[in-house]
Image (cartoon, rainbow, N blue to C red; front, side):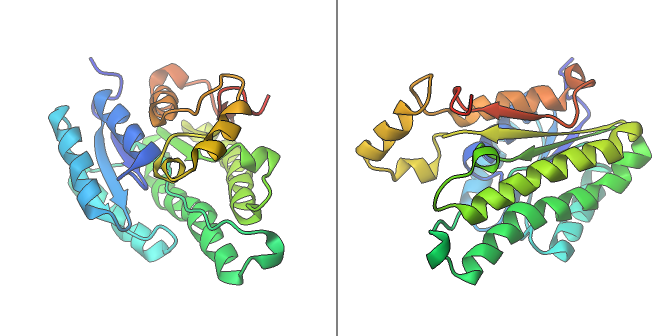
Length: 248
C-alpha cells in the first residue's frame, strides 16, 4: 500500500520547479493532487498529465493565493471533488529583488502578499476541516535567506522569515488536533530562475555550498513526501534546511 493512499494534497504554485516536483512526489506516494497555478495553464496541464500517468487524479485550479476569496473558492472546489484536503503544501512564491534604498512599495507589497499572506490564506482555509478530521499535514516552503538574510532581498527574506514564525506558531496551535506543521528552507535550487544566471554567477553560488552543487527540485520534494507521511507523525514545528550545507 502506498504511503499516501486515500489522501488529497493541495500544492500551490505546482506548475513548475519545486512545486511540480512536490506534486509528482506526493502523487507517486499515492495522493490525489489539487494543483494550484496562477499564470501557467499549459505547464499545469503538463504536470496534471504526468500525475495521471502515475495513476492518480489531478484537479487544476487557477487562484491568486494573495486573495482570500479566491483561495476559499479553490478549497471549496477541491472539497466538492475529493471531500477533503489532507495535505497542504504552501509552495507558491515570487521574488522582486532590489536594494532597500531603491525598492518600490509595490515590490515590497507584492512579495509579502504572495509569499506570506498567501500562506495565511491557504492555511486558514483548510484547517477547519483538518481539525474536524483530526489529521492534517501542512508544509511551508521557506528559504535559507529567511534565516540568514541576503542583500538585495529584504522583501523576500522578510516574507520567508515570516513563514518560519508562522510555521512554529501554527504547529503549537494545531498539534493537539493531530495536525503537523513544518517548513522546508531550500538553498540554491535549479529552477527557471537559476537557469537565467550567468556561468560566473552560478560558479560563485556553487563555491559557497559545501556540496559544491545546486540542489534539484526533487531534493525538496523527497522531504515533503516524508513529512506528509505517517513516518513523520512525531515531527512538527521544525524548519529543515535543504541547502547542501550552505547555512551550517
